[in-house]
Length: 492
Image 1: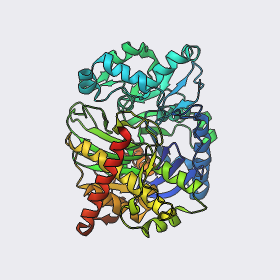
Image 2: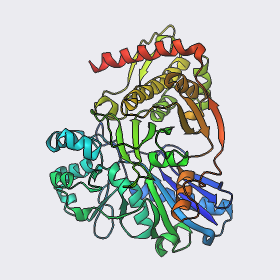
Image 3: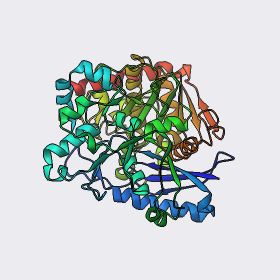
Image 4: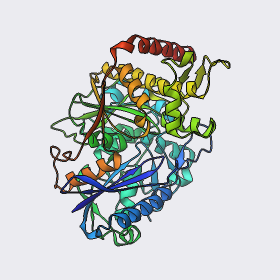
């Protein structure tokens, strides 16, 4: 018996096939091999077409079946992880009406800010646990206000993972966890927020049927099965946003546990049991994958939009270097990058900056001192400083990180980045052999009732632990204070 998990990212789509009995990955595939394109019609906009996600899913599924030689009939369940906060709208024929407005798109910030004032900060803070910001509800309102001819055709509005599941099954559905990611959900009422829906003028019928995060949600249609090479009737048993799913993949499920990732964006994600949020909504609170009315599990999410994408920008524009070469050059530079400081905020409005879109900034560049290695190190230090800045906000609402778990992937492949994050946050970094697609596959196993939340992680292996080094603590504290001054100067 096998489970397959898909991770629908904004950079690429990945899938992993897991052997249910050993709980180990037997095959993995990714497409495209380089970063997926984003459509940016205007500054601050970011769109992708869902058909491109589906095309990649077809490619990687066929690759996995070809390489593993597994009989499709032995794949018993499908799990889906997806980029959070995106909007996909379809008509009555379930055809996509426009490209998806994805997570890092900033066009709806003003709409969300107005909703924050009109709905009232107490209601948003206590019931939604967030400002509506540029989340999915506000993006849907943007379409309603700016593309009325499109909005008139909307049958269902979904998150990216809901669309993928619908493409597989032919049935539009969503989850309470997903609704909370879109800021459609009232935590006190434990239901759709009537106030948000009424304020934006959104009909409840636009929201798909709601299914549990884990369980028999739907099954693979004959037409989708033919495209994917899988068995018709294969059950879809799990879906979650990429950051809750990343936390699941690292067995971060209980209050006080913390996960991290550093792909296109950089995230610290901790679990809380209280309905609390930051008064300025600089970090966000959503229903975690194991949240229930009886046992609250709230995921507190700190997101920095410009992390891996900044590293990728440097790679494309600063010579023909591999990421390994960039890390080596950066490691040859001392702490503080000889005074070079970088603010990594060049990928849209940043929540930790109260939705300001300040762009990336470089300070202290000296032509006779700084070379590529200084820039590469300053990038990693700037990203880590921004994560540190966010963890200070998280600690104010009861989520403190003494241990941070992460998959050994993306920026966490860099020994230097591991050390910088450990020394700046003061937390031990634990690296595991997992990723989002493995988490989605294990989630499928939980949803199929083959695993439970206790034994689903028996195949998870700790690869490495990185402890803060007290000998360099003062140097990193000075780096952080200097970085904060740089940020203060730009914000003022």
